[in-house]
Every structure is written in C-alpha cells, then in structure tokens.
Length: 116
Image 1 (cartoon, one colour):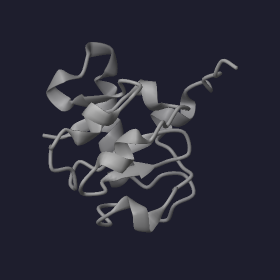
Image 2 (cartoon, one colour):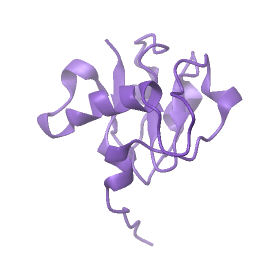
Image 3 (cartoon, helix red, strand yellow):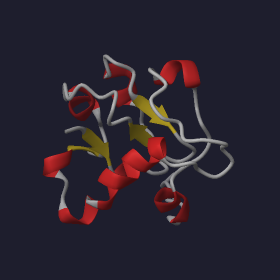
C-alpha cells in the first residue's frame, strides 16, 4: 500500500508534503509531484502536510481519482518522454532534483490557470 498524489497537485505543487516526507520519496515532475510506491513507508506525514488536499491513501482514493494510483507508479516504472529508461527507485528525490517530465495523464491535462 502507498500514498498517491492526485489531480489537485497538477500545476500547483505546493510542496509542503516534500518537506515532511521522512524518506524523501516525493519526486518533482514538470507539473506535478509523484510518490514512489516502492520507497514510501506509509507514514502519512505527506497527507497531513498537504495544503491542497491532493494526497490520498490508495484505498481512500475517490472514484474520480482512481487513475492516479497507476499514474504515480507509471512515473517510476515507465520510460517517459525525453528519458532513456524508467526512473525506478533511485533512493531519494533530493539528489535527483526536478525531473521536468510528467506522465502522459498529467501531460495531457489542460494547464490550470491560477487566479491572481
């Protein structure tokens, strides 16, 4: 089991969750954050810290967010645009930095316009 980042993170990436993650398993794409399911220790610190309500325990995902379970895993398991191989489990997001690529699901979403 793992935590999953859903739609509310896309184009927002508030990142309070990143600061709270004790195992550094939240990676930054171009438009969204992704939790590595193989590195997550299911502590829930990220969910409590998320100010935009984008993080769910996988069994608590609402019906309209179910696709994000596979999407978060795909970020690590599939070879994404511009990459030569899947990211896998590199053992921590801080050393990797911003990856600048997203899954096809997130990439295909229309940009969210922020007020202001």
